[in-house]
Length: 83
Image (cartoon, rainbow, N blue to C red; front, side, top):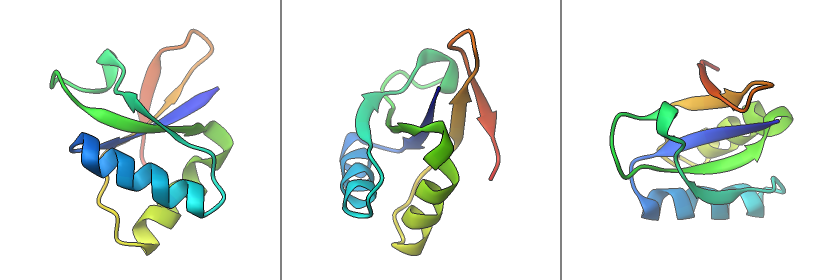
């Protein structure tokens, strides 16, 4: 299962993914799944579900601005989680 951390732009998502990778957390830039946003063009970082908390902590420690976080369920649908 996967998790998504939203960012306000593609540039911020790329910065976030670079930071996560440099911190040892595999991540990739994705277009946000439709159920995670009401805006048409939002990007996020896809990470392993088990790495989500560590990923958010790393972004916060490096002052990388990010948005809401989501995890996928067994059906592949995403639900918001608050860390």
